[in-house]
Image (cartoon, rainbow, N blue to C red; front, side):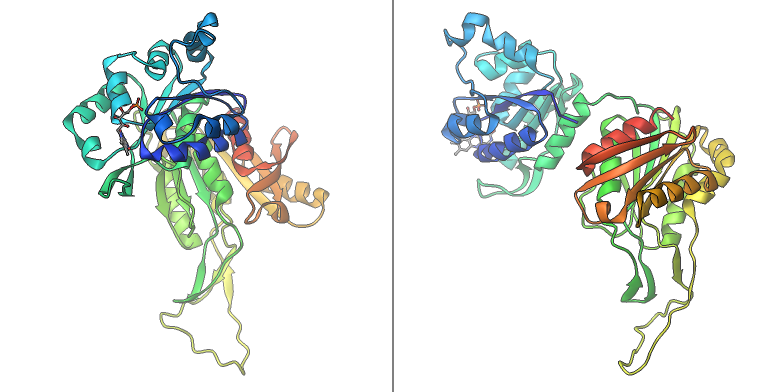
Length: 411
Ligand SMILES: Cc1cc2nc3c(=O)[nH]c(=O)nc-3n(C[C@H](O)[C@H](O)[C@H](O)COP(=O)(O)O)c2cc1C
């Protein structure tokens, strides 16, 4: 989502400044232009050369540079930003920003820019909890500045608690949120992700290879675009995106129940527009007819068979009860299903087409299991009810998710 955006990134005098190097790299990887401003204190912790090499662009520190200011460089920096990021943000820069002080290049640009600002604080826990910092953070938030909560854990100063630079992924998501179109504002989005597990005894289950990455990426894309997102996830080691409600489930029956509860919930004050359901999870089609409450004793000399019975078809049920769900929630419903197939392209399109009509969905995202399962990239085909097909060629799952979510908003 950050591709083509200019991020003016300010690096303050915190021990966490070393982490800014990785952030620059991650932003560049997303094809953003990164213009770094390094405070004098920041330069005591990380060299301009490191940041400059990673950003592929000169690092600025001086306010009164006769070379830069020949073209009023500080205003050019402020105007060029699609977003400003302060990472790490010191207590000092937060205080100056709150007070409107402009006594160095970073604070001057902060005052001059019209771009959205993301603040990623890093400091000693007592500095973070100090009344002065609390008031300054509250002031900035009141003005619409996106101040992230610092992370918890061991701090370089020896204390343990709140004050660590937020995780890189949370910082990137904040930047994506402030730069993304807010076309999902006022909508509710329910996303299922991952695989379900169908136990036949307390320690053994039938499942599949779905990692949940695609579903989590859809949830993140929708949240960044302003949706009120509920993520219903099978067992997964992934970290849910920020600002998303999460329901953890294990079985297809639990997932079915969680989805039905979520979609029938009456619209809240902030979500009257439309409800979207993205059924990304690889829900087990069948489950063992019986679940033993104790571990089955299995002899290596005997064969076993497990009788499987059908699990609820969540997408089909959403499609069949569309009108009553719309009545309960008070919002029009749009259904996006996912179809993972093996075989040839014609077969994939055939099954996706069938899913579209049989399950009364609005959009089907077809993909090959070998392109998708457990991978960080994906390649998909979108099929809608007008018969239109659209390919999204192989790309990072987050990029593919952004495109799917953008397309779904037109339904
Ligand atoms: C070793 C060391 C580590 C520091 N770490 C932090 C920090 O993590 N967060 C912070 O707010 N200030 C920290 N400071 C204090 C700031 O560097 C100081 O307030 C400085 O004036 C900040 O300037 P700047 O906001 O222009 O970068 C640290 C100072 C020292 C000497």
